[in-house]
Length: 266
Image (cartoon, rainbow, N blue to C red; front, side, top):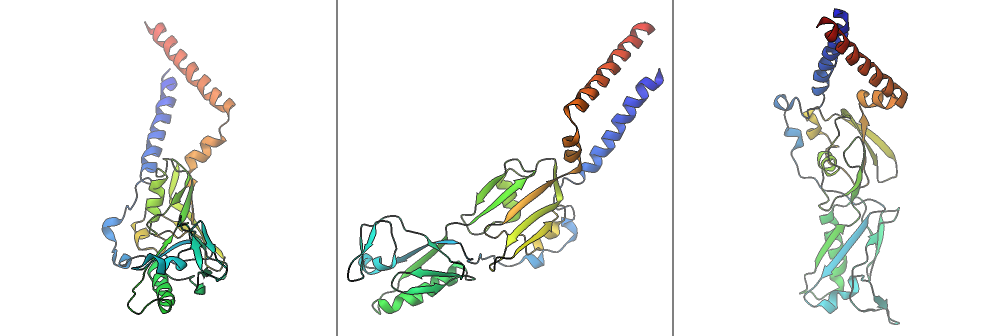
């Protein structure tokens, strides 16, 4: 009769030990107190890549002066080559595979590889010759298509827009509701496409605080982040409905046997 209670107790102990071991893999930055974050010093600037969409605005003291440099919905080109028509939403510029955009009046500009500020300075230098010497145009560039994708063992897989043009991999995961308890913290996969179209992947260990020093700490536009399921999730997915019913039957049988033993003893 003792064996009837011994085996369930043994299974419970094994499961408890396994859960304690798994808990050690859940925490982020386990070695945060023992590493230096000096390598993480510096401000991140995203760089423009082919197929990015740029929203560009040129502002001058006289709106009529800057109007030819702002490509807006509803604008029309007259016979003499001047931009006219009603003012509407700005049309984004699509960076082509060569890294160029066609800017009104100025012509072809190579913008791939530039930061937002560098692109603004480039456009400003190209626009100024067409303006009065006293005019100091204000140029604003925004990457309107900056986004990353988070999938796998997260609470809410989604495409995450990056409105600030700066987001860490941790922020991207948080936007997706963070990892589920079944997600592997030690082997998050980041798939990235370089400016020349070459794809590459990197494995990220969130248990290790050195991720903060990593060149892959900040995401780039169109990054794909995939969280692998851990062994527990993989084993659970292998259990079919019949197996689940079998375990349920064994549990009921054990309960009934325990009840019978108690009745006999009394």
